[in-house]
Image (cartoon, rainbow, N blue to C red):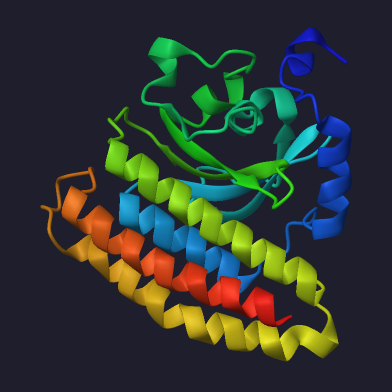
Length: 235
C-alpha cells in the first residue's frame, strides 16, 4: 500500500469493508430512487454535479452520479476527496481545493475535471461505519453556509435510511421488489416538492441556499426520514 493511500485508511477498515458486503452496493447499476435523491440534492444546492460515493478497498465507486463532467464508474481511492471525507464525523467542505488542497488526496483527477468546490457528508451505518458519502461538486469555488451543512447532513442520513431499508429488503430481490416500489412512490412526491424549493426564495443568480429554504427543506427531509424509519420498524 502506498503511503498516500495509507493515510486515508480508517482504524475500523476491516469492519467497514465487511459492512460493504452486507449492503451489496458495489455495482454501478442505476436505481431510480437513489438517482432521484441525488438529482434533487444537486438541484436544491444549485451545484453542477453530485453523487453517492462508495469507498471500496482500493477504489471509490461512483453511484447515482448526477451530471459528472466525465462518465466515471470508479476512481483510485487516493484520488477521491470522498476517501478523506469518510474519516470525518462532520460534513467535509473544501470551498476551493486549489487554495487549500486536501490532505492525503492526489487532486490530479479533480483538476482535470475542472472542479474546485466539494462538500460531502458520510453515509454511516447504524453501527458507526462510514461506507461513503453524499457529495456535491462544482466548478467555481463557493461558500457553504452552516444551514447548508446541516441540510446536507440530513439528506445523507435520509440516504442511509434508504440503503438500510434496501439491505433489509434484499437488494433487487423479487419477493420484496413490490415493497421497494411502494416506498419509492411514497417518497417521490416529497422529493418533487423538495426539488421545487429551488425555484423559490432566492434569485436565479444566487448559488447559496437561504436559511428559510434550508429550514423548509429540512422539514421535508424529516417527513421522508420518519416514513423510512417507520417502514424499517415494521420489517
